[in-house]
Amino acid sequence: MNASERQPPVVPLLLPNAQNRYEVTAEDLPLSCPMPQMQLWNSHPRVYLPVEETGWAKCPYCSAEYTLRR
Image 1: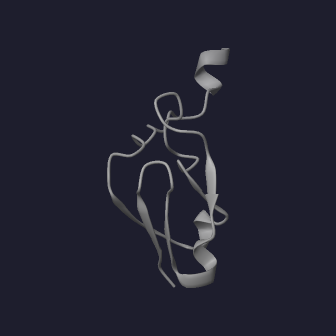
Image 2 (image 1 turned 180 degrees about the horizontal axis):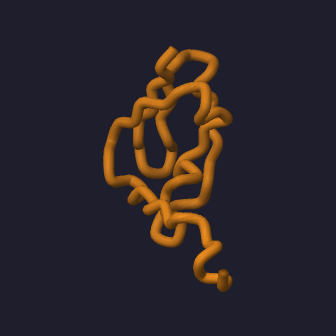
C-alpha cells in the first residue's frame, strides 16, 4: 500500500460568509466565525462568539447570525 492509498477522504470546506444565518449545536462550541470547517483564506480574522449566553450571536465582521439549537 503506498502513501496515496492511506490518505483520509477529502472533506470539502464550506464557503465562509455564504449564508447570513447558521444554526449551530453544542458540538460547534466554542463557536467561532468563520467556523473551523470553512475556508479561511478569503474570509475575515477568526472571532469567537458567546452564543451560549443567549442562544444567539452576530459576527461583528460579516454580520452572520448564529442560533444555538438546544
